[in-house]
Length: 560
Ligand code: ACM
Ligand code: ZN
Image 1: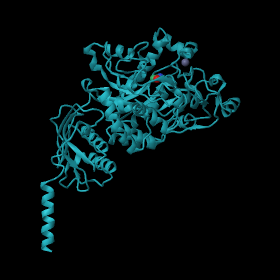
Image 2: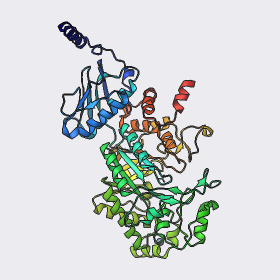
Image 3: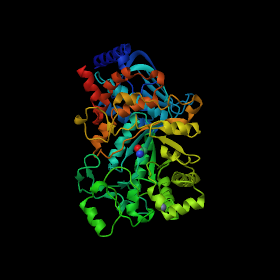
Image 4: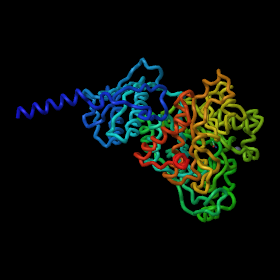
């Protein structure tokens, strides 16, 4: 017995003295992190992740500790425990000496890992880095290379949008989407909730918005204008409870959810529910090119003349800017929305609002005369500024698409520049905050390959990965003193041609992976060739999650 104990003891001592990982040599390939950190100092040794590994964290980082345990267990297939009270080998802590709120530092040695952040959010980013290192160092028994990593993002706003109106996506999918954002250290989810083709958020004061506005009787088949109507009812909406759940889910992952409630255009679904919002409540909704569903034809014949749109594009039937009832409705809706979303930003749309109805509408013309408004662009500005005043009165701020510059910018508005950079440049020169989302580089509904025949039907365009990577939110021509107004960037996933979750993932990845580096990594550290190498390893992260993604780059590399 004693002999056995002695043997055992010797074995343990030998093992600890000659830990095979202590002096392991690492190479740059062992540190494949996206987005690329500011600074990675390689060192000798590797930390072995095994069932003895325990994560510890102070009380204010327990949520992060639990996340790390979950990520590491999934990535390694080993049970890694979080135990706040035990002396762990992976330690999380807050460090107020770090430079910015999103700055983190990781120290990995053969026997411990310390992840420090200025805030819990920053610690969470450090955790994402560790998680990647485990997934990309997959070929061994899950050891992490020793290092000191110091990191912080280039931009404060790192956003990704999802249009759930053209096609409805389940709450589970929205959560998975948020998970993907979190993994990429993105911090904002722009949730496009209302459109011509569907209203997706429950508003208690206006139940018809979801009873009627959340459902369309059919959808055009094929690319606009379409070959026929599929005559299939499509829709869905998020209850306020589900919205709260998603907002909380995102908050745990340090992601702010910005809701978008479109006005005054893209409002056919709301008008179908409440026709009084239109300048002309008795004018039937037109589904372009005769692509109307059988159910809607019948409905219109029976007097239900306003419809949720079934085709794509821009529609003339918009909120009436003359009637007070419109503003009462908008304020009541926004009041409920603001109570659900802690975000200081509320996106009010503002894009693509045709002015034809306003020109013909006696109420809109009276509004112009009463307010001394010169033209319909100024009438739009009146609309947006009035909504802004209401939102500001609740302690929040608006974001609008760059059309809100037309007719005069609302005093405190942040501009989301989508029609190229021009809107963002003009707004920042006027000392307004800007989020850059130019359709040249940030529209993930565009084709990612020029071989369209091999791709699922898309809206058009051509946005390969390399072009996303080349995006810089700061336009070259913008004067240095105005750079401070460019808060960051965002890509958009419009879903007219994206009916399934798997296709949404395919359009998102790997382009969002490139975008994450655009928004996080300093310009000096950006390098397309280096990114491609790291992305090749990053595929193991996608594969581990079972997520769908475009493989064009990898196929091209293999062919060459
Ligand atoms: C937009 O793409 N209409 C903002
Ligand atoms: Zn009107």
